[in-house]
Length: 431
Image (tube, rainbow, N blue to C red; front, side, top):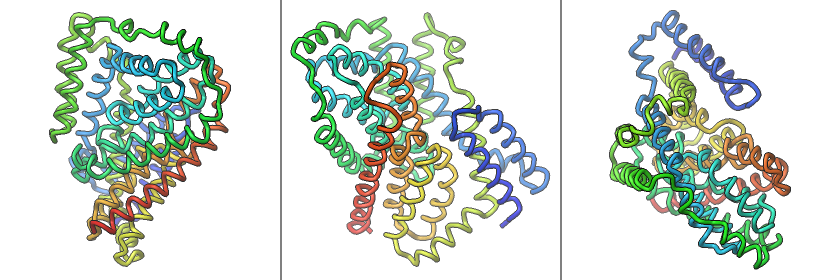
């Protein structure tokens, strides 16, 4: 164990996390400086080889991030999600409670396949326009959407970068996620929708029959389709992408092939040079730096030290191990961005599991904690902050920071105890 190197990396990690989890200052130049300091220090003072540093980076995850940004661009460009959302709203015929249930179910399900910010950017304006036509306040519907987004994020390995990283580490694909997280997802989603409806939405004003008819006359899903040919082909490719991932093919390979096919199909109207500005390159670079920092801690012996200490403390108590995993991942993710939290905790919990603990309950607690704890504080979830900013832009009267904080924290606590009960029961039955 190299204590000096561990302290240096921890200090660098703490600085990066502090900048990453706030919005007033651009974290990217700080990340570049921290990455350079870490790499130069390891090469110069700690005799780490270049190939070892490159080995710290999870290139499969970076390829997946790059490729899926292209896939999502074409899904958005061809307005597939917008079409589906309008189609579902049209089915409600202006019934506000049915509208709420459909929005939350749609959000909770589709966020398992589509990045949360993209979903919010499409749905928030749609919810606002729908509620304005019905002459009802939009805040509760937007709040329900953003709370259920954090629930749906636990369902598949591609729903978030956190899940992809965890899935890569423990070999969990679609089958493992659905088998282990599916019941927890359903319990959390259905109970959340029911409670919001029963104790919040039921007390709010309802639309008039006149406004319902106005809404139906305004909505026509077909008007959002720019090109029927591209629309259908893009849907087929995206569905095929998810099918191959579900069958167990490497997500990075499948996504990069799908991105290439979409670029070839759209070559007449869109080239890579047209969409390169839509790709968030700095996220890819920052994640590479985070991987270097996190895995260098493991290389220098930090993860082994912490996991060994925890094993002695727990004395082979799997139930306490699950509680600590859920508690630590939830607490850190409530205050900090979930993906860096996942990257720094992953080597620790991986070494922890390697000490002989039954892995599944600990992995379930880890996945659930880093995803669903985003509801504790709005700043713990980029999606929550985006929803609040859009609500302010549209002057939504019944959604502000205070209301989302109060209700989000309440449901985060409910979810915490649901997860805890589920993992404890899971451990009791299968361990």
